[in-house]
Image (cartoon, rainbow, N blue to C red):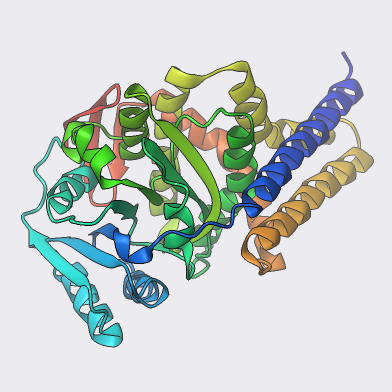
Length: 381
């Protein structure tokens, strides 16, 4: 098979799969746009495990208090995290939110998922009908809690759609490019075809009674993938995952190449664990193959001609522009055109992160902790 034929096959596959994914995503967005019910925000308690150190932390906390004034918030902070406690105090002082409680507890012990340990402690304080999990770098749009709570029927775990807005550093922009290039085109088509078997960890919401009946977060403190573990709690008990089209904004300040590589590698390790249990023809065609076509497409074009390289670049830019339009439909605002080079670069670099995750899948770095894994379980760190 000549290089030109290989390039042609890759180009057709790239365009075809993108059109299929985009069509499914648009159908899912349209279907969810017809949902008009709104739940009671006062019936929701938002659990937020907090870790200080990110310059954007205080702003994220403040934004959520302003956007969800009727909800209850439980902020879960380690007793040795002076930066996290300071950010919480300053956010509260700036907003005077009437129903926010700061729970300060000892740092979670080694060998356990620090996020799940905090959430387990926080669940003991929840007295509302619904409980939400929200990462400390994630911002809910106004009204989001009510819209998502309306979808959380008995036995249902609802999750939002993460879109990044971190642009303070080059590394942050690479992470933003990666997520925004793939989030809507991964989660929404899977939801449309009934293939949703996990949630993203940035935002989820469920009935408190359902969570407690399944043993709560204490059941999953040994598992590294808290989002996938929570999804399995519901699915294994006959529950259901609902992938909402409700976007949430994530602002993670990624400081330098080392932080970026560790973050991306961790995500690839988590993806590897998920795919080990859930790989199917649908997931392979809709998620795995499209994400890994970008680099082969460009390399094949280099083996053909300058014209083929130009075609490949046009295809990559066109995909990024179409995804930008999709994000605008979801959020009502356009992302900067300057994001496009970072989206393309992030997709080209994806095989590097996947290779790293495959070579050493039992070791990851999670913020300030080095963690050793045995399958999905944390054994050290």
